[in-house]
Length: 183
Image (cartoon, rainbow, N blue to C red; front, side):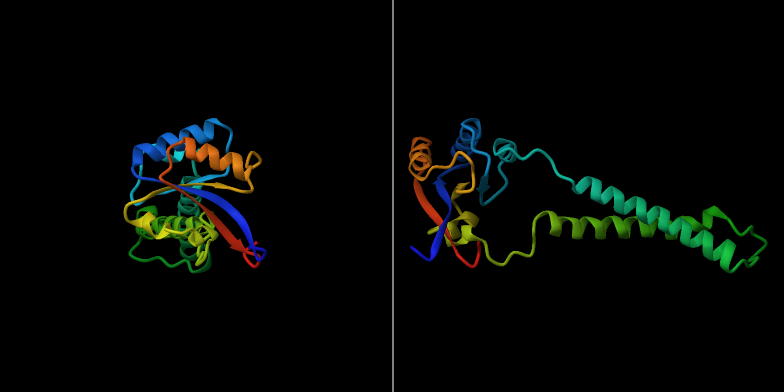
């Protein structure tokens, strides 16, 4: 294995209760570079591995506010400053006429900021990840629950971490390796 570096130890569990208990215990023991892979969402698992919230709601809010402000300013500029025309006897700043465009730009920019924000926050696209090299990992989308502890974790020791995962009742423990090119 001279050409491969250890990325993580990956423990497989048979059900969602077992992985949630294992994740809570691993976090309580001081492991911080944890990740869980499950075939369906497990309520509370994110909190168990130390995830504390996301920036996506603020990114979407920023996009919505940018759309709101941009749509209103675009119409104020075009209707009242650049091309002031009296249409139907209405004043140039007739705000009810601005509502549809402003609303649509608010929704459009909020959605675009949300989409691209999720791509950036999730570091996507990521066609290859070292965890994919784990034997049996393809079952994460069918019937197996996996907990990984990365080798970059400050508390990580290969033998001690393996013993710890065995104590947690893992059905199987494998090593995930990354090529030197991945590092």
